[in-house]
Structures are given as structure tokens and as C-alpha cells.
Image (cartoon, one colour):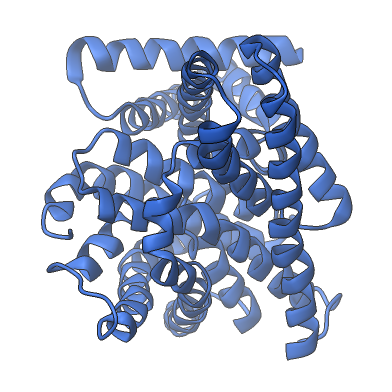
Length: 410
């Protein structure tokens, strides 16, 4: 199957599911596409069970060719993060900077250790032999709120702007921190990195701080290029090149690509919008990146649903995944509550921010992609289905009910 065939099939399925939803159902697009792809996957698995294996085999081959892990982490994510950051108001984000910073750093670390520690006890009680370090790795996998999932859902809700900024701002930055945590813990588990503060701190500085610095440089470069142009076709191309080239450069420099494109997107979407773009260019760039966001979101959520075809669910891993759902939510509640309460003497919050930030912190494709990037082995066969259960619950259950919860978290 050629790359063009894979892209054509994924776009066709995304368009079909989006049309059915828009015409007859009216759910938020991302949730609907994932729900339809899950149903589609279950039907194919049923056909396979009935002996009609050819269609299911073809679909499994399609999902294997699409390869969600590398496709998201090394491709789609850069464009989705830039598109999200490009439309975030920097002044509103600056007003929430301390809470966003604490949630994206301390919150990720707390969630990793709380989920990892709790799952070590649960898995031991279930008789599942997963070493403690791999339980922590599972904690890192489900720690980040997914900016793709979060921003896709927030678009469809009439949430207060301050709450939207908190959730979206955290989700844009915490995945970079979570990836650093994931790399550090995986390196320790495989004996490739020392389990020392110095080693992890140096990794964090190199990846996270390096990513922010690279993003600032990319943003400055993009700003100066756009400032001397008044041709929106070329300016669109410049932003695309900055995103793709910047993300690729970050990978070569072993710095955080996600943080680099987020910082560049914030700079161009705010200072670049105000000082370097004509009104026509601004409208065209907005339209272009909104369309990129919609199309890639649709493909991503379709792929997350189709991953069901290639994940092996042993009963013990399924039970462990179901147990991980409330534990991940409880850990999220604690990890959100501590920063909010710590900042309460300095900043006034309206009622229920902890509840809203907990339930609105959706997991998504990044968690599945991280789990898929694990080396083949017994640990991966346990962590992957557990992560998938947490993500499916988060998008379908939390995503469909988050509007009611957000009403109280202003």
C-alpha cells in the first residue's frame, strides 16, 4: 500500500464520519470521529471473528502503515501544536502564567509519580508483574493533557475565556515536559541513564529549555521574514516551513520540538499578528491554520480509534486499564489542586477551578503515541492497552460531559 493510498483512505474515512456526524448527530467533531472509528474497528474485529478476515487484515495493514506513534510525534504534532498556539492570546496566557507553569511542570511530575505508585500496588494485587520503574513510565504516558484533544473540544464549547486559557495553555506546554519525563524514565528502565537528579536535570535543561530557546529563535526569524513581506501566499509558506523545519531541527538538536513550535506559534500569533502582518495576511493565515487544524485533528482521532485493531487486550490488562481510569483522575485532581491552592492567596479564582481543570484535562493521541513508541516486549503489552483505555474514557466520557463541568469552573 503506497503512502498516497494510506492518506487517501484516512482522509476519505475522516470526511465520511465527519459528514455523518454533521448531517445527523451533531457531536463535537473530534469525539464523533473517534467514536465512529471505534465502532468501525469493532465491526471489523467482529467480521474477523466470524471468519471474514480479509477486510480486517486489510484494515490492520492500513493502521500499521499509518503508524500512529512516529506519525504523530514526528509529523502531525508539530502542525497541530503550532495551529493551537497561533490562536492563543498571549496577554490572557500571561495573566495565568504561574498556574500554567506549575500545572505543566509540577503537575506532570506529581501525576507521573501518583499514577505510577498507585498502579504498582494495583497491578501487584492483580498479579501482573510490571516493575515499579515501568509503572512510573505508565504514569508519564498518561500524565500530559493532550493539546490536540483539549483544544478540539474547547472549540465546540462556550467556556469562559479565563478557564479556556488555563486548560489550553497547560495542554500546549505540558506535553513537552511529559516527553522529557518519558525519555528519562525509559532511559533508566533500559539502563541507559542514571537515576540521579543531575542526569534528569541536565536532560530537562537540554530538552525543555533548549526547545523554548529554539522556539524563540524560530519566532524571531518568522517575525522578521513576515515583516518584510506583503504576499499572503508566500507568508503561509513561510509559516509552514518554520513549523516543519523547526521541528526537524529540534529533533536533530535533541531539544523539545513540541515546545519549540508552541513558542514560535505564540510569538507569530501575537506579536507577528500585530506588527508584521497586513489584515489580509492575518485573515488568510488564520483560515489556513484553522483548516490544517481541522483536517489533521480529524485524521488523528480517526487513527486513535483504529488503533483498536492492532492492540491486543488480555483480560488482565483490560482490568488494569479500567482501574487506571479513576486513579488517573484522582492523581490529576491532586496535581491540579496543589498549584491552585498554593496560588489562591495571590490570585482570586471563581468557584470549582480544580474540578473543571481535572475533568477538562483530556488525554489523547500523545499518550497512545508514547505507549506505541515503547520497545516490543511484555512491558509494552501491559502499558499500551492500559493507556488506550484511559484515553478512550477521557475523550468519550470526559469529552461528552465536560461542558456541564466547565460551567462551574470560571
